[in-house]
Length: 111
Length: 488
Image (cartoon, rainbow over all chains, first blue to last red; front, side, top):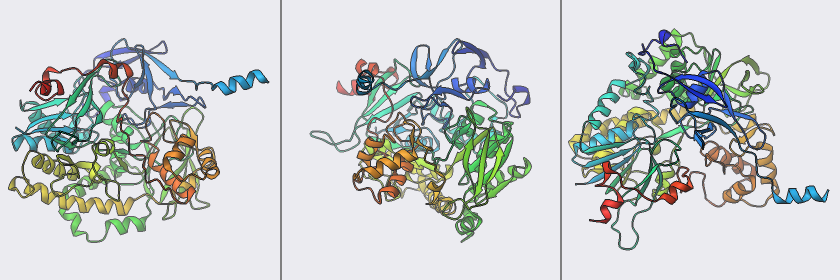
């Protein structure tokens, strides 16, 4: 994040907050989105795709693409770009493995 | 008193709300965000006041005045965090002609215990706006590759520094404010790469230059961005595109190439440059799902068809802003004003909207020039490799899309979506839909079922628990909600 002292729009002193991401403490300011806090910590990818396990993070930034889904305080599938961070939020990254089709299980046994 | 429900609190929706109030209607404004202003006026939250925030925006004082007027008006209820997830068609046995019920979830985004509300307004103004359209290219799924809209939102709404070496690419005048917002937030912009070549730009921008003079505000806004580019020393080149992004867990470099008038890369022009972020937008996709669900007809260019009074083909449903044609803030404000006035019972011939009617004419012409200058070239798929992701949610590659399309005789978009899974993920095809349609169109030689990826009867995900919990009354809207009306 642009440090308040360097910002030409002259922001008032922000109110600090902290969340955890997979147990790691991240500091932010009141009013930031969860994605904002994560990006400001220097982390770009915070979800793994189901099939290829590839990292994803912010793409559209306006709630359309659903690439930034995280678990927040036990609730899954929250768009990190749309949810404001609240002090103490426990955020967990999501990797939703694809379900294993019954046919492939059976195929495994037959081998 | 006529009850007007306005969906979307960007420039068009806010202008509609004010006009409807001035014409004497009772107004409810819904927006899925917790702020007013839409994407154009995306701003810092109340927790982060800044003395000079207006310097990041155009017309920001106008926005502040508009939202203050509506918020202080007892006849206008503004509901934030209000996600419309379904809209019914009016009519049916025993029902009067007009819009159908509007289903809303009220509460924090993607929350678990949001309230369910149902509105049955006399009139609706749809002002749902648009989002970026970004065409797929190798590496576009890497973290650090974002849309221009994301870059804007992170800069204006979060003050996030996107990178030290940011590449801005795509097509359209929107690239300029994106670069400006990045620079004003402390990001280093390596360059802006506009896909349209100089001849195409000149064909769109140069004929009948007097039209630009009448669109003064818009032209000055763009001139301001050009001046900003010079001040921040951001190189701007035309006829160039990012044809690949490189990196393992995040973007580290891009390949830039010259492209021809159809956007096909020109051999021998590739250049690799280091980058820590890439912002790419090739235009905008209107957010049409609610209009389609309400039964509104679309025109051949796939925007909502409206008449002079911004009335759609469905009685009592009006539309304004980007869903009726991509035209920018001035056109959206003019259309919104007319839509709100007519929805509240006025007519387009009333002196109250004469100025808006004139501005609408001027800025609609301006919008047509932008499309002529920056429209997507038909050769864009030339950059795709077999392993390039084309549907981000379902991780469908271009190779898989083609091989499945080749191996089936089906020419139905619906059937091909089911067999390829492209466009079936959680974004409901919002990001890839139109690109997938174009790719399948080209591969199959023509799709036959007349369906489109714009149709989404459930407009936003709703949790099963919320669906099961039933409809709640909301004190702020008792006079308008289903529960209250049922007792009348």
